[in-house]
Image (cartoon, rainbow, N blue to C red; front, side, top):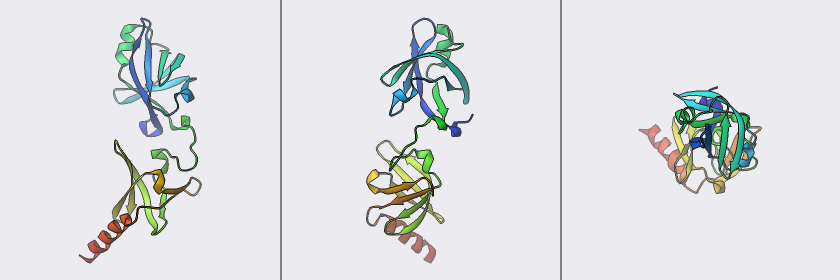
Length: 182
């Protein structure tokens, strides 16, 4: 299993008690979706290592977890601060205008005014705002990934329909035409 086939569930924050139990911080919207986990991948030395869960107790976005093979303070200390991963198939399906960043990479993008403007190359995830990076020929178009600019997402045809702010796409299109003239 590779990181590309997984999503980051959170990390191991600290040990709890004297028998190797650990506190997982779950970096997810709905932690209760993960209250019956049977296993998890722990990143150790840039490798995802599977661990089986014996017991899990959820407390908000923190879970107190007992893992098979981790039964001492020393063993628990070795994996603290490690990242946790699960296969992408564990993600709950989203509907409407909600999406996972990895999900829409490669989607064709159609703007309400300009029509076909390329495809999503990646989502740039900045602290205050995510940005669609759209491949448009040899150039890129950057559009804020805000719900107000998304008209629809068609998961069957892999089409993202946008209504970009007025003039934003023109900046990229005009730059492309100017580059072609020079």
